[in-house]
Image (cartoon, rainbow, N blue to C red; front, side, top):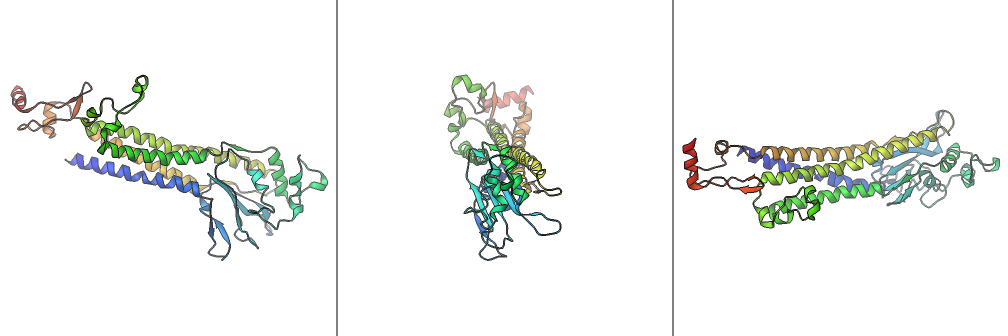
Length: 353
């Protein structure tokens, strides 16, 4: 009885924990795709969920301080590319340069659209970025930029860092949500429609399918331990899905930061765009993957606790048999349902012992 309560609690906890990756992954897809008001500056806007970018760096406008730095923050999200300058003297103070999936993402080509564009900074003097009109590097003397940042953009555009299959983060994050919906649907079917959970694969691949084999009626004879084995496969598969966005974000993010490190070499000595990985993004993705791991561990422990007790006497001590009534013991013997000794057989077995 104690094990049953623990097993039930483990299953409920496992199901509930998966709500974390189910919420986190769609949330990361909408990050950077909308504007929010700036409470410190009425009428100005900020990028929504700006802290959840995969990579962020600074550029475009140089500060007037003795130790100058760049003022405009550029951010690469799973589904967007944005800029923001909350302290800009005039509006706009932020812009979305790319929103939605794309087959190819060239960050430096997007940065080039900032001066004078609808979603960019309209007041940048043309002589700061006129070198962008050149098709080679270094540009002619009369085409040189007065801002070294744009000169570096020109060079990196020609020797560009490009993110191919830029739609992949969208696919990975959506696939996590779809997988979790499928898992919860399977939980419902295990309780309400066990027959729907039987393997219906072609004969030549049935050996690879983790679902139980047999007819819909056979599925009703399976015990909870057998279904926990199916659950374990489903939950660990969900773990794999949850780790894919984390792996992709870490790889693409590190490559992007490395490319921006080369970008720094084209800036004046001591200047940097301060490229860094997004701690908020990595933290949420890693946290959601960790929640999925704990969920799968709970289901695995539940499967272990529910394993059949070997030996008839051990079954009787565990409460699996009722000597008076010979209640069925749910288990498997040779792949067929085994109901244990019945009624009168119980006394004869007891006399032998």
